[in-house]
Length: 224
Image (cartoon, rainbow, N blue to C red; front, top):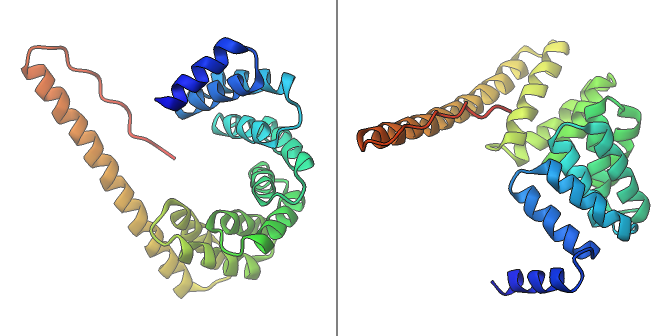
């Protein structure tokens, strides 16, 4: 409440201050309104051009909208302003992997992992980039680390999937079976969670309908 009052007072004093636009952008972002967040970040950057956090937030919003080239530009500017920043290295490196720019993404992720030696996300993207570049042995080693460090999470699930593909290419049958089984286990767990969420929503709708009000339409299951 104190913070909200402070921001409101700041907006009254100078509604066009870059800090005001930054706060608005963060609020929009937290509410999954990334298009509105982008507009606020851009407004902030007109007044404050050397703040890496603004470029990071802008890049994050573009990335959530799958606007990877725009995200890449924002993250590049973030790294230019704060060279050696491992978060900026990760942001730009992983985005380049998604764009297929492996020669750019791989060195950035290697440099980031020299600072943060344990980062399942960075290892996942680095492993992907190495695999796509034909460096299967090193890719498998790095992805194994990623899967081990996030064994029950989303990153671990994706790492196991990539590992199964790599081991199949390397004709390592036992490793294919092991990693594919781990991937299927995590996928089935997530599917059960989604099914449970959808069933809870349906139960709520049935209850609302019983009480005489109009039942809402159930949302589509979340996909990744």
